Image 1 (cartoon, rainbow, N blue to C red):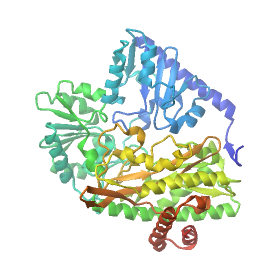
Image 2: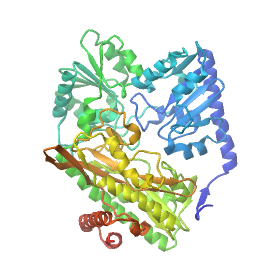
Image 3: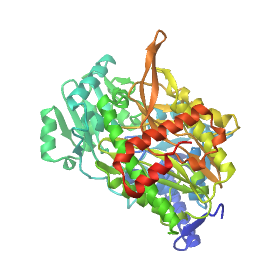
Image 4: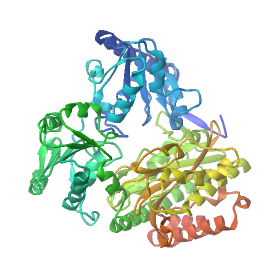
Length: 616
């Protein structure tokens, strides 16, 4: 019990935990049996599908099925005598809880003294040992890195071992949900225009063909959307772009006959989803194939082994990241709808708390999604809502469940990170609000995070400036106090697409990444945080768009336009810690939020908006 935190547990937790852990031990034992049969000394199970997606259809959630850890990032390694899960600091607390009693070691990736998976393997394997993996879940670049590392042992690597096919007997089927068009007025470029851009880039790179495996790239290029993957409006497919026509490898039953005919008229032909390897083999002698080694699996690349490969970033990654003027205006409209929904939600929340109603983290998830669902053009959440009270908020990717969650009562801080998929944009916002009394220490932490968020919001930088190098601007107020946070400060955001997209990202740990130069039209999150395990967590997040910052004799510059519209709770601020410029920024932001949202809300939501946007 910390800061009035109370957990609701249903069922018989101890018995359920023992049974659950025994189940995962049995599954690891079955995997080891198959490894022995095939002469494997180690087997790698990443969090990935054949499209290297972040969020996976259940069919490819092998790591979760084997270990019980359901975070969106992490890799399981199983040897004859060891099992370990590598994951980053966002998930350490979650993984520690979910792996308890499973005999799977938590390898805290990035922590000093903890080797990465490749180095650990290199130190443990003996010459001649064999490592296996399903090559359709490892990127070409990742597979090459592993292979190069293991040359020093030397150890053998085999990418064709699909061990789970023989032990996961109730494996969910592949999704078969419908594919549909993303149409005007929400689309500003036609398929023909986008394909023209991509083909020009293919030609400039010296290739004739281009294989696209990443689902958000395919959805963007073809102006199609689906719902095969939770939270991301994409569909399972491959796209092979040729000089004259395209082939879309997708289950035909997902497309209605009218759409198939329309695509055919634009020289986009439908092929069976599992026909991609045969199609690549058929390209032998027909020219060079462009692939993105970070977004194409080694399994697919082996199917194209007879071809000359040109390795480069998918051209659509850059095109997709630079939203058009029309797209950005659509996003502004989506932000107004999202802001109105949040006004309704927070007004409900404060009234429910004042009335003494039982409000839980699960209730918050339900209510915030219901408020968004009442808005025009809403499709679904853009990710699983993170509603964490006090200690739960200290886990950056915490998720409440009906079986385990906190009641919001007593004193402390409630962190809510949520977002929506709208036909006219994708939203992602984090706010922290007070419950009961907020301590001076909590206010100080909140204000340091706010100072960093404001500093980054006000940044001006040259066109093409590497996004990772902006990260220290947001961290400086924390670093000056000896504080820090483990995740990046910002990620790219799609346009009615994945809530996480590249190529830009604001994180000093990604300074070696290529193609991160900031360009006009890119939308990125601005979300510094501070987490005190067992106590509370703070993160304040807005989405910002790169807009022109003017041109001088020294070049062209960019600045950020803040897109998100929702008050930042001033009751959590230690106002004496803000300087005049920071107060002015916050007051001006709140004035903009009030002016743009007032026409869209009424009653309690309007009253809440007006109260929470009062100037400091």
